[in-house]
Length: 300
Image (cartoon, rainbow, N blue to C red; front, side, top):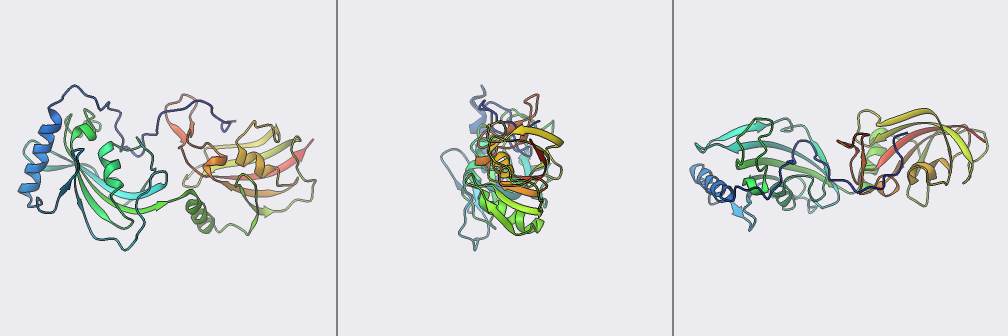
């Protein structure tokens, strides 16, 4: 069983290849000033110097079209955006590093440390529907990370970004329910688990302290494949053995019920997320709502 509660605080997710494993107190103190001069030269050469703004951190940015949305990128929400990455070479040219998500959306839990500091600062300036170019020196960029050999160490980089949406967990869940065309909501538990019945059983209701056997399939709302599943999990309800959203959802069912349980991260893995067994990557990122399809087989 892979979705037991985790008690150890863990490092923040390195999502979609945007975050760097580099330590930002690198010994090359002169690189930031050198990078900023490269950025200024690039802006001048491309006649962008009158359009750009800068911050105290060394971020240079050009915000594009004025968005009709008042919604800004918000810390703690899920961001959907597209991006390209370039680096500025010694000749002052922008060289493509990554265009994987030029038209394909990337999704991140927008938490401190998830993306490089310069991009994090830039995203906070944006509104939904807005495009921007961010010019980022290496001390708030990728440091000595070469992006798998695609650029030199300590390179200034350009992110071309379009922010599509910033969504709360409740908004993510509402979208999931609509996209999946789930049946009518049966109930919502005190912990926030939404219960959608697929079929209703005729067996006894489940109460706290009873031992039940269930089949389950566990999914993130955006996952294409389940991150866990089982055909015959037996456990004691109300024992805090498993995450709250799953346990509470089961206690709202009866034997023979098949249902989908959808719940916020506060009833799942919260701010910690869930690592794989070797603690090398996240199976469930922090602040991720979940959906479990469950069938109650029996109770003792």
